[in-house]
Structure formats: C-alpha cells, structure tokens
Image 1 (cartoon, chains in turn green, purple, orange, cyan):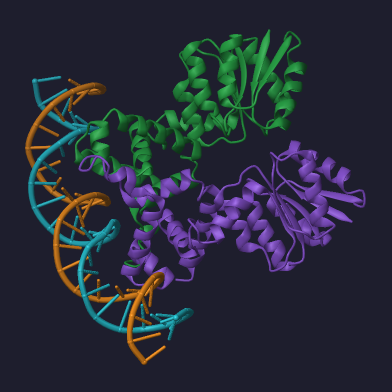
Image 2 (tube, rainbow over the protein chains, first blue to last red; image 1 turned 135 degrees about the horizontal axis):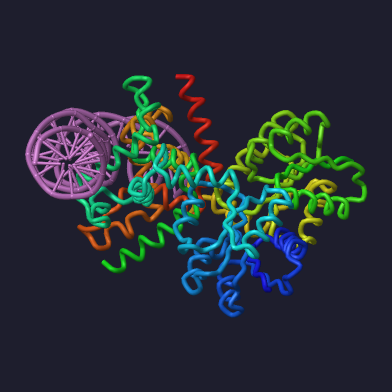
Amino acid sequence: MKVLIVEDDPLHRSYLHEAVNAALPECDTVIEAENGTVGEKLARDHKSAHIVMDLQMANRNGIEAARTIWKERPETRILFWSNYSDEAYVRGVSRIVPDGAAYGYVLKSASDERLKLALRSIFIESQCVIDREVRGLQQKSLGQTNGFTDSEYEILVDIALGLTDRAIAKRRGLSLRSVQNRLQQLYDKLDVYQSAGDDHEDGRFNLRARAVTVAFLRKLLNYSALERAEAELQEWLEGK
Amino acid sequence: MKVLIVEDDPLHRSYLHEAVNAALPECDTVIEAENGTVGEKLARDHKSAHIVMDLQMANRNGIEAARTIWKERPETRILFWSNYSDEAYVRGVSRIVPDGAAYGYVLKSASDERLKLALRSIFIESQCVIDREVRGLQQKSLGQTNGFTDSEYEILVDIALGLTDRAIAKRRGLSLRSVQNRLQQLYDKLDVYQSAGDDHEDGRFNLRARAVTVAFLRKLLNYSALERAEAELQEWLEGK
DNA sequence: CGCCGTCTTGCGTAAACCCGCAGCTTGTTG
DNA sequence: CAACAAGCTGCGGGTTTACGCAAGACGGCG
C-alpha cells in the first residue's frame, strides 16, 4: 500500500509521514509533495489511491488538486487535513467529492489519535470521516436550515467578484430583477440591515460591499474561494 | 535571558523552542503561549523583553498582541515569524513598531540558518532583520512608488468594510466629493478599469466591489486586516 | 512674488443599485 | 382540481455611485 502526502509545511509533512507509518503498518511506501501541482503529478505517476492533502497551499491549493485527481480516478481516497473549518472550504470540498467516494476532513488541531483513526477508517475501511466541527457546517450549508442555498451562495460569490447586476444576470441566465431579488434575500440572511439602519439616518452601509465583508468575517468566503471564483470568471469571460 | 514564544501551532512551537535553544545558549528560560491573549499576559507577568511571535493566530492575532505589548514596554524586541508576506501584514506591523525598536520579520519558509541568525541579531545585537521578500513590500508600501499612500489604503479599508461614501466622509472628516476623488484614485491604481471596459458595453464591473476583491487577490487586504478594521469601526460607531 | 502641482470642495448628470408592487409560471399538497 | 408557497419577471421611483468640470486652498520653488 502506498500513501501520498501533499502538504507544503515541512514540519507538518514529516509529522504526517510519521503518523502514517504509525497508523498504517500495511503501508510500505510514502511519497511526499510540497504543493498541489506536484501532488497531481505524483498522484498520476504513481496511480495513488490513498492521499492525505492539505487544503491551503501556496502554489495550487488542495481543492484544485483534489478535483483533477478525482476527475482522473474517482475512487481515490483523500483525507483532507486542514487548519480551518471555514464554511468556504467545507463547501468547496463537498462540491467536488465524487458519488460514493471515501474521503475525510480532519482538522490539524485534532489529536494524534483522531488522525490515526481517520487514516485507518478511510484508507482501510473506506469510510468517510468528518470532524465534528466540520460536520456541523456541512449540515448547515447543505441542509437549508439557517444556512445558504446554492443560489444565494452563487450570488454572493458574484458580487464578491465585483460583477454588476446586469453582468450577473447574463452569466446566470436570469433577469435583472431576479438577480436583485436574490440579492435582497442574501442581504437579509447576512443581517446586513441590522447595524445599517439602527442609528437612524446617519451611518448607513453600502449593502453590496457590506455583504461581502460580513461573509468574509463569517468565513463563508475566504481567499481560496475567491481565487477559484476569479479563475472561473476569467474562463467565462474568455468564452464570451 | 528569557524568551517568550507565541505561536498556536504546537509543531511550530516546539520547532521554535529548539531553534531558540540552539541559537541562544545565553537563554536560560523559554516560555510558550498558544495564542495572543495568553502571550500578552505572559509578557506582562514575566516582563519579557524577547519575544518570537506568530502573526496568524485564531484567538488574538500577533499584531494585536504586539501592539499592546509594545504599548506597555516599547523596548521589547519582537521577532515576527509568519507564513505570509501579505502587504496587509507588513503594513500592519510597520504601523505599530515603536520608534527605534528592534524587531524582525522572518518567513516560516526561511532556512534554519536564517531563523537562528535573525534570533541572534535581534535579541543580542538589537538589530532589525527583515526578510528580503518582506522588505520589497515594505519599501513599496511606505515609499510612494507604485504603492499605495496611506489615504488610499484608508479608503480601501473603508469601502471594504462596506461604508457608504457619506459615512466615510463623516468618519474621515472629508466632503463627499473628496471621498469620491480618492476612490477614483484608488480604482485607478488597482487597475479596476482594465477588464471593466475592455469589451465595452457588456460585462462591466461594479468598481467598488471589484476594487475590494482585487485588493484581496493582491494581498493588500486579508482576513486579519479586515478583522482589525471591523473592530476599529465598531469602536468608532460606539463613540457616535 | 508668481507659477505650478496636489488636494479639497460644490454642482450637475448618467448610470447603477435597492426595493415595493403586481402579474406569471411551477411544483407541491390536501 | 383548487389552493398555496416559491421563484421569475416587468414597472416605477427614490437613493447612491462614478465622474467631468471648475473654482478655491495650501505648499514649495525659482
């Protein structure tokens, strides 16, 4: 059995290496990659079926890498090992998991035990293991309770990118008014009005910009999500 | 000699601990804190004069912590050890350094040697040591060449927070028009027009929102900067 | 001192944004 | 099938943005 580790921090990488050795005696080879690009390449070359992947990496982040890896070989098992449980990451990951694939999401703050257990569960037992903290977000974000629907999230990303209403309408195939409806809905859920109107006529917020900031502060968005969205946008702009 | 380490990742913390031991034989005690709040407390209790500090920490980030520490004891020597060289961080740090204080900024990706050298230079020789990569940003951001002036940066933060033009005017003591002037200036420097007008009538950007995103993608802004700015804003809102 | 560049401010306008109102299309449920 | 909730759309209008134009204000500098 072979395991591929994709992680850009050398300290964490060697820690993972040790953890894999300890948790998986049946593993005879461990390969390491220090960023997403190298990770993809090694995964391809070695036909890796077992991968531990960091999410936030400078060169090419874990979500991107995982997507292409899964595209080529959907039965690959991937354990995401991340510092953060931002909703943006969770959403990003669950968006790309192939049907029925075994994967995991464990926080770096988890104990040794948790990590080792997760390694065995995913790689040996083909089970999905998702940290409690992450799980909470996932339910909220996918179930509709209190969380955001896909269309709301979509529009959030669009205004975050700085598109005009009209541009969004064109991109998503909607009328201007529908876009604005969704915006209102978004503003509502993000509680942008709250502090806006409270001290009467004076210090009002620009709803559109405020919504983006609030989303950021709530970790609904983060740098990597923006980066991905921007790339998609550019792609769309190419295709007229 | 005593050294205080403030760093939330246990792996990095123990790595630092070792590095300090190796580089500073004259150091007899090493104290550790796992977040900014604890760091401030320990610094106060131990009257620490030598601190190694991570920037990005969950509870209270390094810039906040350093600010209060320096406020109480400006001659404290602090080495910032960070994963990132975002302009937002660099700007944040150089904004709070007391006059003539010895401090350093070293990236986590630097070699063992670099780190140890920096430790000695700052703690023993009272010199400032700033990594090459970081230095570049610093010059750009403080010198005016190509970079952003303080007033531009200020307004960038204000729109990022989601304030209206009017609110900004009030906050900064300017007229509406002046605020808008600065905005134009900002849009200009951020190159927001570029992709905006290229295929003219079709896919235009919302300049205000776009500017914020571009700033984010260029690391002019980041989460921690936003967080700080938001706190300041709330404070200002209190004081009417 | 007069000239010039930078910064500020007011006026005015076209465009974009926010949103209430109301008519339509769907899918769901009793 | 009627009833109802949910989403899309057009219309209309009040507010905010973006920005050209032009008139001061302030600070060097020859």
